[in-house]
Length: 331
Image (cartoon, rainbow, N blue to C red; front, side, top):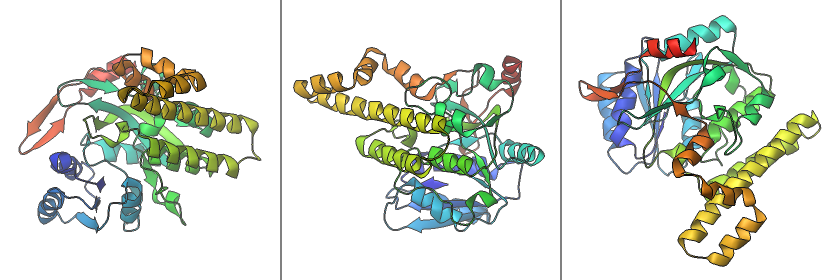
């Protein structure tokens, strides 16, 4: 678990790990130079539970670097990644490990529910994607991770990885501030690792103003574009369909980048720049016609789901999904 100034939600996230039905676990929290009360929150949790370990970073280095520090200390057969503002169903880890072991998967992910703390919930895997478990191949993974594309953005899922995925030297790309989960899974798929998705929604992504996954900015998108092109160069001699998908993803990143520049120019009334961007990238300009909620749903391809609101249990927040309702919908 990487954390930077996440004290507001950190205790809830830690509690949802401590309450997992799979008790044979360790929680390694890498604090990325927080300036709030995060370290105090973690220290209190450590005092109550010896399974919790704290790694402190002296300088802010980003979520990928923080996860790499934690990975270097992990001892388990399976590695789970969780954001410090999110929550999990109490049976999540036990369920995913059992399913992945049964199916001999190297990477296992479950459905994701986005919530905002006000009973507004949305599910990532909808329709046929939400009915039955499925294997993910590298072509589908690329096709489903285009910015403002169609279909569920599988890069937003929070997988479990077999420890062998990180040997001998596979790690997160520390140049990335967003999209690091997608980049890692893409490289592992290219190595031949087997990725299985189980649609039941057991991971709960908290949407709020400072959520990392929703913060697109020019620097982050430029880094994503560079990583995409670097991967393209590495596999250039392989199947042309894969090259075509990487080129399509590059164009989608360019559209997202142009859109961010367009918003900045509009905000600052730089009309000549607005016109120039609209001419060079009409797809970015077309996004302005969509309401902001539609743009976010298009970005993530998230649809509404039936889920209950968050509630309090003792001193921390939990999120209850009525899985029976989900199971009926899936049928």
